[in-house]
Length: 135
Image (cartoon, rainbow, N blue to C red; front, side, top):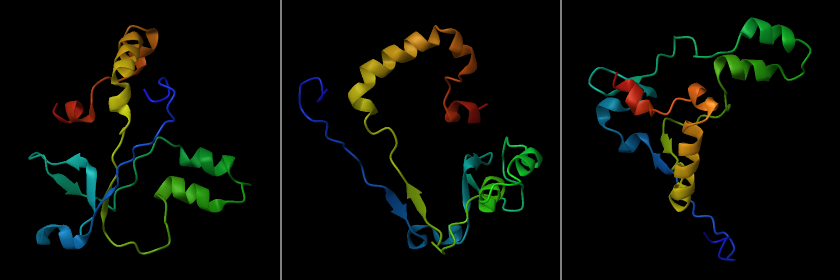
């Protein structure tokens, strides 16, 4: 690696990909797509904005716990989602993740193998989201 060789580390960031409504198929424009959910054909579904948000929080308990907390907007963000209070239009913004993984793949592989043999592995799912969606 750069650091082991005595060279300063240089971050290699890739640019985000922004897709505007003008670049989306006409039939798909104006729809908020839920990229976490696919139909039987594998196509993304429109977001069900009437459905309650998925959460593991107990909002009744949070309401009591945060009763005297001055930032009331925090509870609203947790319960209903963040409102940026600006009209950004409908766009997809895709960020590349783990761009530096390639440089440390050998180390990641050995750590993964070591963790797979540890007691903590019972609490970790090693399958990808694609594996789970194909069941």
